[in-house]
Image 1 (cartoon, rainbow, N blue to C red):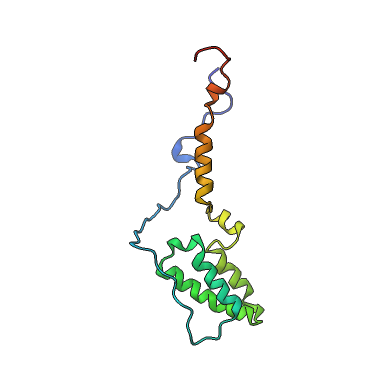
Image 2: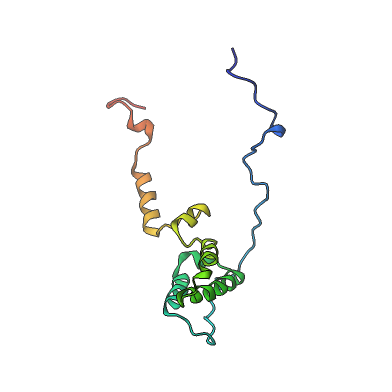
Length: 144
């Protein structure tokens, strides 16, 4: 008896083919794009200024393009309105911030994992010091 159940469908009839329907487009960026300054002609709330500086320091911003910073600058205007009491912008602010991975849930959805260099090095070192599964279960005194 060769197997259990019906034979598999031909590959061209399967619903899932485990590949992205749209190929990934890779665009080269020559250098890190610096964060623009908040426009001087607005009265910025202190929380908005802090939020803007947080994005500059975030490792997520290392790959931002000019258009990313422009979109985030427009989001800063909403952030400013929010901190000045305009709660009507809260949902749009949340949606815009989520596109950049502002919360752990957003980063999980975007498949972004932030790790420190120390953590990566420690994991690599630990994996090098662990014996293989075959060596772990080899009987003492027997050659493998």
